[in-house]
Image (cartoon, rainbow over all chains, first blue to last red; front, side, top):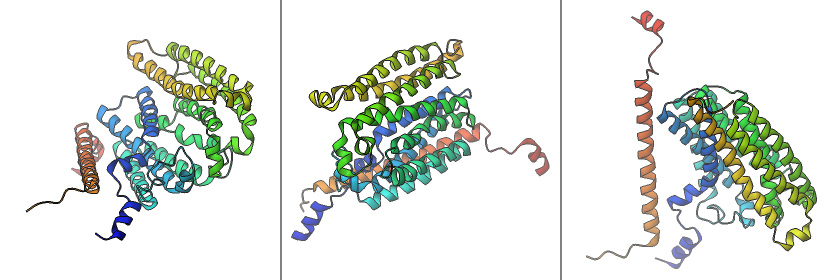
Length: 312
Length: 55
């Protein structure tokens, strides 16, 4: 083996299977699996368990495919940001071309298989979701406008709608409400993250609200969007997806969430730097629990319905 | 005859091959399972009217 071969091996290490799995953003996939499953199980039409399993699997693969396309396009900025520098492409484990190929292949496969396994409406929404995340959000909005995550949040909000469409073959007010819940949750969740990861976005030149308008404006936005979210989330408790369990969860969590947002709003930078953004980090962690608990409550209402206990 | 010690790279390549193999096997099982479920539920049977016309 020559020196040149040794060097080339060091510069371009061969990827392991786990590196390709990492391209699919498994943590994001877990959220997609959960919300899609809730959408599917909350629907009033029963789905064969094996078809339900396959549908959720294909939705998760579709979401993963859009993650791979995101990593292909964003390799340059991922390299600059601390939070993303260890992703497979910037780390040099997988080439950008491989990420593109995997993303396109899995996108086509997941949409076709979902269509064959369920129906064209679910497949069409999945195809649109992949397109929205990879093209509208990643290629266009992310580097162009501070409203990137507000509009781009729609991509993460579609999975429960797809799950609902798998069962019913259509779109209805209930699935739109679940979409709205995630859509309105996304801005405060990501802006809280941006408040304590601001230097990352600034270095990469991503026009997050914290970079373009400063942290004061971002704090105002977190509070304002949290109030809107709370109205929507509690209001949904009186609709077909709600019930006593959901309403209890929603009232408690939204009270805590609004309180957290208010604490973020009344602080200034010197206070935040003083405790290393403890309040913002706590709010961010709460936001994860918030979403899981709301969808868990929707699932509980649906699960209890056969015994006449769920819903109103 | 002695074999050279396996390089770390070969181990990683082997792991990748096994991973791809298992993924493909799982995909075949899923397609087979879907076919069984759809056939037993009668998803592929033509509507009754068409059957009569065909006969």
